Length: 245
Ligand code: ADP
Ligand code: MG
Image (tube, rainbow, N blue to C red; front, side):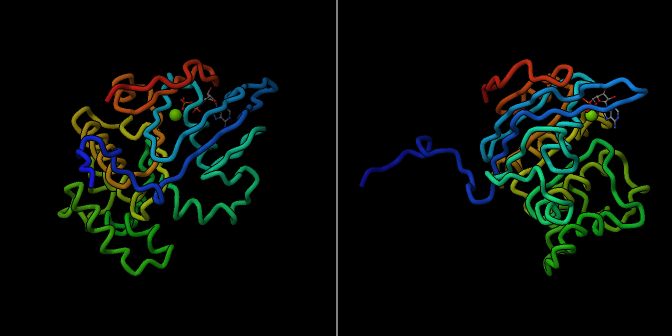
């Protein structure tokens, strides 16, 4: 029997636990004061299952709009979105609900925690929607991972920005999503909190094998990804440099 050196083995991924994503010719514009603003102009991109992709661009380049459309939170004017090869473009809110809750996680820049729920309850919430009897245990486990055990019963207003973002991250991960979208998840944090969040995202991405699509204006953060797409004025101007890891 041939002995395989550990270093020869492919990087450990969980292929069943991860989704690919494809966007074909996505465009989106708004009309403001009778002026048409083109926010996304014919975006085509493909994210293989398990990849950590960063979409880098200055403020106003269209990152949040693109992430909302890729994740099904918003609809494009034209173009198609395929999640795990299934075309989700025309799905109704009701049809998208199971994707949102079970297979995709979303981390927003502005946390969006429910103020009347404790940290633990915020994290449990998506799992409870799934009638997951292990919701509390999973939420507690994740909060432990991010060193927030002692803060579990605190409400968001009792937490710092960094703590709130860690809670928001746990909430996005509690259902073991196959793909995670993160929109400037460190945008409101100081550098030590940002690093903690990014480290955690990177670790979880590796462990769970989930696909990670992260938007940022920061070059430094972009360098942590496997691949970087650069967005400028709603167009991809650099279609995928692989970072050395
Ligand atoms: P980013 O996240 O890169 O900062 P956004 O996707 O938020 O960029 O916005 C891109 C552009 O689209 C901006 O010029 C913004 O003003 C415009 N935009 C976004 N949403 C709307 C909207 N609902 N109505 C009008 N313009 C919008
Ligand atoms: Mg944005």
